Image 1 (spheres, rainbow, N blue to C red):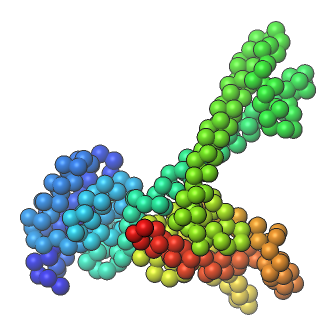
Image 2 (image 1 turned 120 degrees about the vertical axis):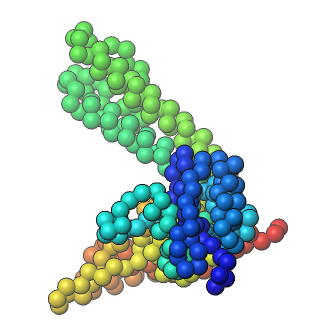
Image 3 (image 1 turned 60 degrees about the vertical axis):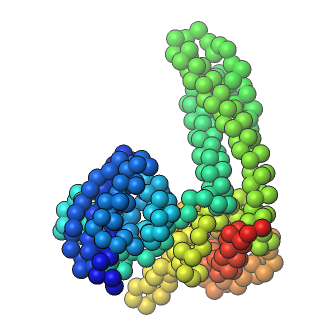
Length: 352
């Protein structure tokens, strides 16, 4: 290791980043706080370089608060590593402050514990992520609105319930949005106002989702270009291909093996053995949107793919539960899709 090299560690926040610089032996040289602006990032870079040759940096939250600083350091030839927060036991022993967190980030790079490369915040996967996030939140809010509307109607006076409640969501919303008077009782006035507001919210979200669906039509074209191999597999649609490409990121070098992708998607098997029972259980960690995308592919294949249906029948006869079979299938799907995701992402970086 170069004796003149220094390592920068950064604890990131919304308004202020705190940096710490250590030398090749791990000695803390200095700490500094800067504002989260372009000028602040450049100031932090020049300050770190004033202590020696800066080649590596460890940053907490490279895809969130630290994304701007990460891009600047990469543009200036500094190798950046994603640093996870210390576990609770280490925090209790060392205490908690921005300076100590920044120092710990630098030490993690020096010790080789921080090896994950940050995701690039550009390219095809970034565009897919933006549209997918917006649509997912709109669908969730729309579901909440109709659930609240029906919940209020179920407990409403019987005449109001008979008049407005309907099994079809859109019919129920249309009835509530057109309602003008529910009766003369004082308590019925706020009830009517609430029902109309929820109905209008549902209709507005429906219109928003329609706009986003138009964007998803372009997304389908985008995934056809940048995830063509992935889209050819049975059960993989535009939405699931976009989610998996987003999770993998624009720089596929972050994924060292199919096991790393499985862990990232929360489908790596976890030991749940005890005594004479030898089994694995579902992994409830990882990226849940990617896990849901794999679940969607699994359900499509369990319904329509003859090979998958044969596998399900065989494993059911062996005594496995449906959740255990789904876990196995999701892991097999990751094994199948991993090389295709890498090939597609490498292809998206190739010059056209």
